[in-house]
Length: 330
Figure 1 (cartoon, rainbow, N blue to C red):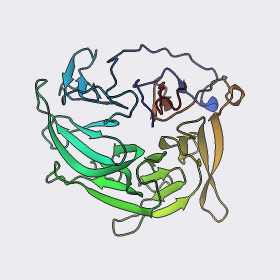
Figure 2: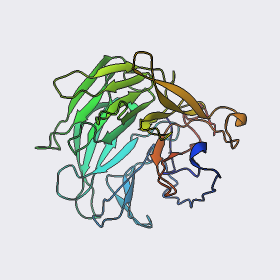
Figure 3: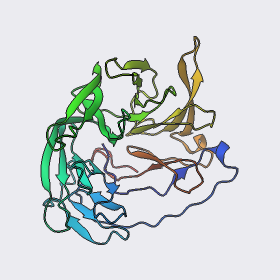
Figure 4: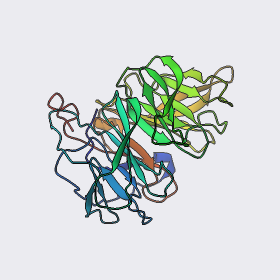
């Protein structure tokens, strides 16, 4: 696990065949807090003014300048020699009142909590436990099954799957739907994502050892498709047409606590199936990257068009202590 103190890193990659000349992009760093409250942070419109705010630990910071800080729950600085009790914050209007609530995911193997927006910057938010056990170190809140509302993609007691909200009573217990047997780590595990691999219009679940193909109906089982993208697992995984040939490729970091970033070109296997060809973006030495870039521990990644050129870029952050004093490295 990694403590990510920055919402975006000052480095993004454009694959060589998409641009003839590299462009240097600069970023301004804003320090929200010097205290340790959380492992990660999130964006979303909390203030109901149409502009994104930042949610980080017990606070939300009002955009667009992020200077005004408001409490969601009583703040308690975390022990820097331990992991925080807040790993992920997702903003979504769960109860349908038009105001963004906050879904908090804590340490792997602990409960998911929804904090209900009180529609005022004053006072603490009502807290609801909606699910008892969220695992994997890259869970995500995203529209998986195509119903225009999000699901929580994660593992649960070793099973890959997703959690659905009871939209009739969204602050009550949510329901886990397994797509596999108990083949994953009980609590932890690196590498997880969502995307349409086979081009059927349905989003699949990606993991380090392959992908689970979403069926055409909820009465059918998800099909396990095996391919070892990385033995150790990285972070968030993405299905994206990197080479522009019309099918989605896979982007992933290779080891959450070591080195490596790659994209996997989708190619036809013998017999008409799908397989992948690895293309290394960044390895463990400078000579493995066209621009001499190398750094370790891509434990949190995003895929966004950072420079407005229509192509998505890979975004990551860095932290000093990923495993506390066990591995203080950049």
